[in-house]
Length: 218
Image 1 (cartoon, one colour):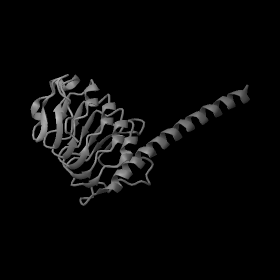
Image 2 (cartoon, helix red, strand yellow):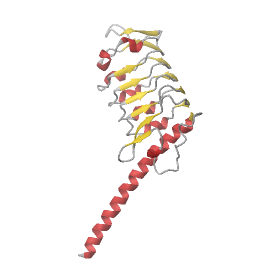
Image 3 (cartoon, rainbow, N blue to C red):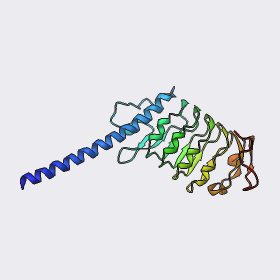
Image 4 (cartoon, one colour):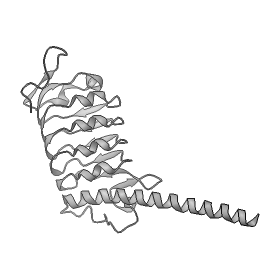
């Protein structure tokens, strides 16, 4: 009987250790993704100085918030005088809810991998120097509420995939170089027109069935 109890205790301890190791590996994967972002950015004010990849997890890093399982849920780096580009590894932060990188000088494109952030609620990349198209993959963000990409240099059409996000409440793509027409389906029905202004090639709201929204738009 004592032997059987010992076996159960051993199995329970092994299971606990295994679960702890799984959480550790997952937390480290979050840290690897964030450290890839750090390597892709120039940080003259040293706001990322605490982002030490040798630590067990990134939950003690400044500007990073984690949940009770030590998984990253927030990255708050707005108005931090950062430049460089966005690392595609950010798409591996599967528990991330808030990505706040507004009011910096981040260049390059928005990685399509951000469409893998299934828990994302807020994507704030406004007031940067981002170029290229808005990735259609952002339409996979079924928890997204806030999408603010205004005051960049984005081109191309507004992806119609975004109209399939039922949770979306705020969209601002003003002051870019977008083209085509403004979506009117789904959540876009309630987005004010001022959130699309200052796009010289962007036409008015689309008329369903009468015109292709992406005519001469690339």
